[in-house]
Length: 199
Image (cartoon, rainbow, N blue to C red; front, side, top):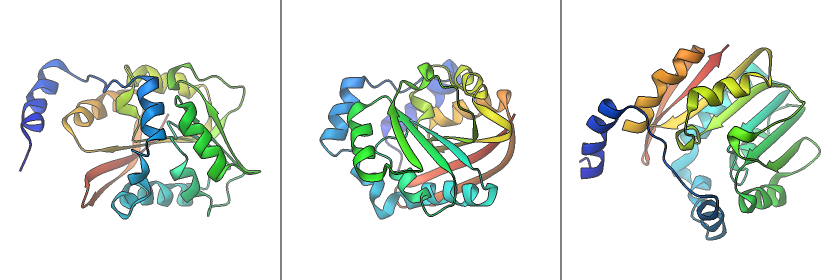
C-alpha cells in the first residue's frame, strides 16, 4: 500500500514538474560516517547494480566515469570487467575516503567533486549516473555538461529507483539524448530502471 507521501507526490510532480531531492554536503558526510548507505552492499540492492554491470560488460568501455559514486560500491562490482580506468566522483569527502580505502588501485581512482562542478581534461567511453541524478537541480543541464567528457560513440547510463520524482525526470533526460536500450528491475526493496543513452 502506498504511503501518504507517495500518494501526494504523484499529482504534485505532474503539476509542478521535476524537483530535486536536496541534501547538504554535511548531511552526506554524516550519513556515510554513520553507515546509513551500507544497505547498498546488501542483497536487496543487487538488481540495479546487476543491470549496470550487464550493460558495461556488453558495451566494453575502456574508460568509465562514475558520477555520484558514493563509497564506491558499484566500482567494486565493476572490477570483474576488463576496463582500463574508472574514475569515481562524489560530493562527499567521507564517501570518497571510504571508496579510496576499499577500492582504489591502478585502474580505479576516486575524487571529491560536486557533480555539476566537475571538470577534467579526460574523456570517457561511458559515464554512469547510478541513483544520483534525482539529487541534481537541473538534470538536462547536467547531461549537457557531461557530454563534453564523452568520447565519440560513448554511452551514458542512468539508473534510478521508481518514484514520482524519477517518473517526472525521465522525459527531461530523453529530450537531451536518445535511449538506446532500457532495463526495468524489481527486488524486495522496490523497482527501478536503467537506461542507456546515446548522444
